Structures are given as C-alpha cells and as structure tokens.
Amino acid sequence: MMRAAVGILVMLAVASTSSAGVRIKDVTSVRGVRENQLVGYGLVVGLQGSGDTLRNSAFTEQSLQSMLDRMGIAVRSGVMRTRNAAAVMVTAEAPPFTGVGSKIDVTVSSLGDATSLMGGTLIMTPLAGPDGDTYASAQGGISVVGFAESGQSAAAVQGVPTAGRIANGAMIERELPGAFSMPDTVDLELRNADFRTAVSVADAINAFTQGRYGERLARERDSRSIVIRRPRSVGAARFIAQIGELFVTPDAPARVVIDARSGTVVIGADVQISTVAVTHGALSVRISETPDVSQPAPMSGGQTVVTSQTDIATVQDGGQLSVISGASLKGLVRGLNQIDLKPSGIISILQAIKSAGALQADIIVQ
Image 1 (cartoon, rainbow, N blue to C red):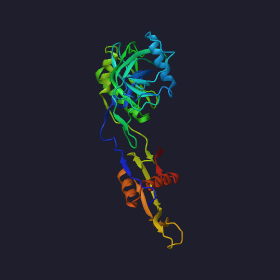
Image 2 (image 1 turned 90 degrees about the vertical axis):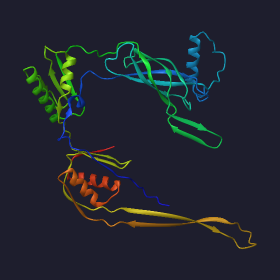
Image 3 (image 1 turned 180 degrees about the horizontal axis):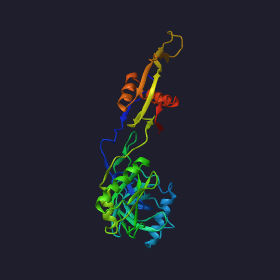
C-alpha cells in the first residue's frame, strides 16, 4: 500500500496582453454603478417528507406557528409533526438601475436539518438591503440540481439538494439606491489597480475626446481611478458608452499564484528568473502489508489467527543539478519542465528561488 502523496501539475502560462488590446468597459467600472445584495428569511412548503424536523429546528416550528396565526389558524396549543416545511435563507443580487416591477433570480438555502428542497415552494419572503429596508419580495417553485436518496443500508447523494434557485423569483417593490444622474464628472475604477494601466486608459480617452470634442477630458487620479469631465453636448450614458468601446493595453505586476492543495501553478507573462542552479531530491516511503495466517498444531487447543507482515522501504531519488534561467515565460517553463518534477517539487523550487532573490515576481499562495 503506497502512502506517498501524489499530485497533478497544471502549469498555466498567462499570455501577454501586449499584443492585443481590450475594451475600457472590460477593465473598468463606473464608480457608484454596482449590484445591490438582498437577503431574507422564509419558509419552503410542499416538500415530500424531506423538510426540517420540528423537534430539532425550533425556529422552523415558531415560523410555522407565526405564519398560521396571521392566517387566523390557532396552533399554539397543539403539537406539530409535519416534515413538509423547511426554514431557508433567501439571497439575491439586484443589478444596477433595477426599477420597480423588475424581476431578479434568487437563491434559496436550507437552515435546518432538511435533506432536500426538491419540489418545494417558497412562501412570499421580503428581501431587505444592508440598511434594513425591504426592496423586493420573493416567491415561487424551487429548482434544485441534485438529489438525496437513502435506504436501510445505502444512501446516494448527488449535488447539493438543500440549496436551489428560483428564476425571476423576486420582484422589486422599491427603488434601489444609486440612481444614475447627469454628473459633470465620471469616475472610472480599474478592476485591477495599476498605475501604467490608469495612464493608458486616460491617454486613450484623451485621444478620443481631442478628436471628437476638441479637448482633453481625462486624467488619472491614482493607480485605480480615472476622472473624466463630461462634455456639455452629450449625456452621461452616451458618453460612457462611447469611451467604453475604446481599446487599451492593460498591464499587471509579475505574479506567481500557487494552489498547493490542487497542485496548480499560474505564472504571469512578465515573470523572470535570474540564472540559478537548482537541485531537488524527493524521499519516497513505501509501506507494504501482507496478510498471513497462523495455524496452530493439531490438538493443541490453539486458535487460527490472521497476522500481518509489514515491509517498509525508503527510496531517495538522486538530486539532479540543473541551471534555470527565465528571460521569458517560455524559457522559464522549459527550464522547469527539464527537471521533471511533481507539482509539490515545482512549488518548493519556486518558493526557494524567491527566497534566494532570483525570482522577479510576487508569490501568492492560496
């Protein structure tokens, strides 16, 4: 039986963006234009015996009693034994500029010990924003991807049956904050802060406005934001649509992202390694257990027992000394592949090269 960890290396080389530009709308966002998160607590009914156990989920029983009381049904003195209801949290994201009467998708997640929400219907649930005010109400049948079935000696579960979605399940009841007016200035924010990218965006906008409106209207404020003056002759929405289609060449710092759990290494296009000599040796431990039967002599009164023979072997692979230099991403990947290591070895080498000061990039370990 082999007890050594085995990994799979996924080496992703992030292509350079210097050869092709991207639209400004794909790397920036307008300040103040964002999604609004909503949340609410509700009840799902109509489950086929897969709901909360009321004895274990006191909040579900209290919610059912409160709902029935509002409908004029007195159940406080009785004992409820239903398994067809479940307490859930309902979450949603309202896109910017969503008006009253618009419909959005919602996600429903179980709070108690329900085993599945399949076939359930969400009772009308108010959804509130961070300020505590109600902005939408959700209701409808739940779509669940997955199932959970069990018998006396086996069980099968696929996906997450205790969470689901309701397409267009919430209706906006109140205007969300953040209405778009006619500002004199428009602030663009980079999704990935970088001084060079901010300057490139400002230069591209100025080149466009100089030819279209006869003046330079943009300036970079810092590594994340660009301030643009709106021309008097055009509306804010049309102006943002025009500059959003302009192309720029974004830049990013050199980074190496490592996910040690999955053995994934992502190396940016600008990562370089100064010339270093690297050797790496791996120690493998192999433990083999062979069952054996111990048979007593006839008429000895002993018992037949099963024993185990354990063999332990250690193998120290030879460390090969290799010279690695990465003037480009292709050269770096070629040098690492020449060593022929597992993902754990690649990760260890990159971290050691960084400690030696030869890796000209930031390492981000996830």
